[in-house]
Length: 303
Ligand code: GLU
Image (cartoon, rainbow, N blue to C red; front, side):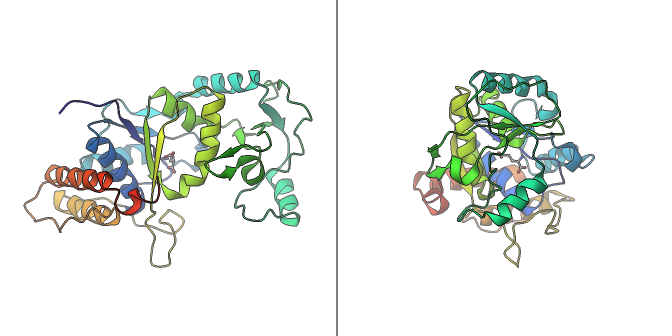
């Protein structure tokens, strides 16, 4: 089968091993890439050092390999990409889109509590440090967080970024580059054309598109898949004590894949004991392709 120009990725943060929710996301992004004869990449998002769990990145790669999912190119580690993030920051600064902010989370939270914004889940920054006029920011003031300046009436995918999200942070006070910036820089650097990820990240997409626009980058396509929830309707996560997936053999791997496939509405029957992981994956690719072509289920609602 000939390759297409499709490039997809799975970008886990190694803050813990994969559970049923992150496995479903990994599988969805893998299936979408393979159903398009594309390239699938793994990127380890290991910038938020205080939240990292030792050994988790190796563990995640091992978990994915147990399920038959391997990166088609070398795994990218965000911790090795700091010069590229800094370059993007300099470019935004040239466009007078940045300012330094010294406000503490506490100060912002207190203000927001007394001035709530209806319909917004975000900690919308009240703009205390925002200069009246756009200007070049002194990036040597490393002790401060750096925020982007979102112009009024910036509406992307129906979200009013200025009102509902506000001037967000791209470089934290502790010197850590934020997810919003690094994800945009790396998706572009890796030539990612299609992003398949959980619905919990959908509200981040408009600010990522805004950054792509300011940096003159090509916009990828997005698909957000429904989240796996527990019996209390909570998203599976470390906080909600989601069990880690660690199959002891290919039979167990198949069960996990089958369950992830059920969540993705693939409509496959329970795998027979003699089936191999790669046979199951081939079947799943066909099912995914079919459902995507016919725009069934979440393909019809979440693009
Ligand atoms: N690293 C992010 C996470 O684990 C996902 C990034 C993305 O898919 O955009 O939640």
